[in-house]
Each structure stands twice: as structure tokens, then as C-alpha cells.
Image (tube, rainbow, N blue to C red):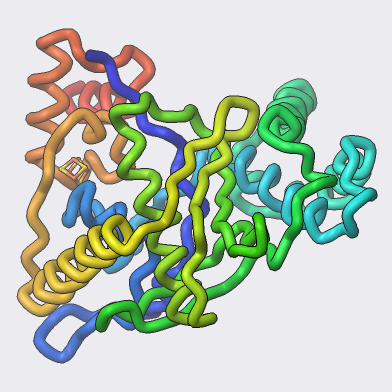
Length: 300
Ligand code: SF4
């Protein structure tokens, strides 16, 4: 099966400047994006967070970042004012911020490509109305920062929205990538379940639900129960324990698979290169996978 990854979620800093490895080192925080990356491949985690190798966000991730920014400000407006016209005005108001971003500038877009970028961002923003009427949403908070101990793990994250539905809190997160098939829904939902655990630890109130708004597509939601919350927290604890042990011993295993063809650190990773070559020979790597260019350049 051909495979391409979703654009990465906006990363949250691990807040570990100048990471050192060894017995005296322990990361200070774990965010859902960092935990997810470590679960994907410990070596990839090391390259991003310890070695800090360049991994600039591509256009899809930046489109998502801009859509998030506009929706954040839209949902901060009072109910009754969250129209598409208001969203368009916010998009115009905040566009100059995106233009100043060095990651955006690094894309080197022509005027035509920049227009296309803005159109894609608008499609993502307007995609919220496919899922809900934001004018009727009861918002508790947006860009809600949590920094809390969850079962011994120093957890840190920023929640796009905490809503109030039927007098209970509901976690809502936006996604601008492609919605997963139903059989893959559990992994992305773990992120919002962790946010639910963080909100419970912060407010002493367990959210009743957690959901992912795949903009323009569909909403994946889950009722928060002691059982699914416990499973998400247990996995977080196991990841934290494995990660801290890897940092102490400086042993970061590779976890090869289809994502290697899209890994920004492929040139540093012989295991990943072997994997991509084997998959390519089996015809299971998409022609536009950046890893093919890396291998071709190194072979040539
Ligand atoms: S190429 Fe594959 S195995 Fe290597 S770091 Fe990247 S994801 Fe991990």
C-alpha cells in the first residue's frame, strides 16, 4: 500500500534547550507531539529534539498553522460575531504575521503560489462550518496551555479549544490533514484523551468528551471514560519511561516502516535507507516521497 504521512501537528516545544544525554539528564516535559514522535521512532525523536537537525515545516503544516491562528481568534469573538466574513477579516489581519515567519519565507513561494497557499488556508478555515456552526459554540477557552503532572509524567500541551457542551467540558482540537480511516482513529484520539486527562488534573473536572475536527471533512469524537483515559495515560507513562531510559543510555532504537520515505532525517539513518530501498523495489513508495530523492542523490 502506498503511504504518505499527515502534515505534522504544530509542534510544542519540549523546553529542553541544550539537551545533554547521559545519566544526569532527564527531559523536563513531554507533549503529545513529542510522545507521538518517540512512539513512531525513537531515533527520529533524538534527531529532532537532541541533535536538533533541521526539520522545517512544509507547506501543508504551515497552511494548518495559519488556519489554527485564524480560528483561534475567531472563537475568541463573542457568540453572534463568528461569521465567515469575520474569519476573512481575521485572515487578512493576520496574514502579515505569516509573511514574516521565517519558515514561510523559506518556502520561497511565487505570487501565484502564495495565492494558492492562502486559498488552501481559507479552505481549511471555512472547513469549520462543514462541522459546526461556530456561532453556537460555547467556548470555555482557546489555546489553553496545560502544564501538569499526569501519573508522574510532566505533561505539557496547548489545547486548541475547551468547549462547554451540556454543562460539561469537551476538548476540541483542529486538524488540517486528511482524516484517518475508522480503523486508525484510536491513535489520533489519544492526543485529545491526554488533553482530557490534563484538564482533569488542572481543574479537577473530567471532560465528558474529546474530539478532533478534521477541517472540511468530519469530526472524530470519543466519550471520555475512566477506561480510555486510563489507557491513554498508561501509554504516556510507558513512553516517558522508555524515553528517559533512552536519554540516560543514549540508545535510541530505529523503528523502520513506510514513514522512513518521508523522514527528514533519512540521510542520517542507514536502517531507514535500507527500508526505503526495499520498499521502493517492492513498488510501495509513492513517487513524490522525499526519501527517494535523498537516496538517489546519495547513490548518484
Ligand atoms: S529513517 Fe526511519 S528509522 Fe530512521 S530515523 Fe527516520 S523514521 Fe526512524
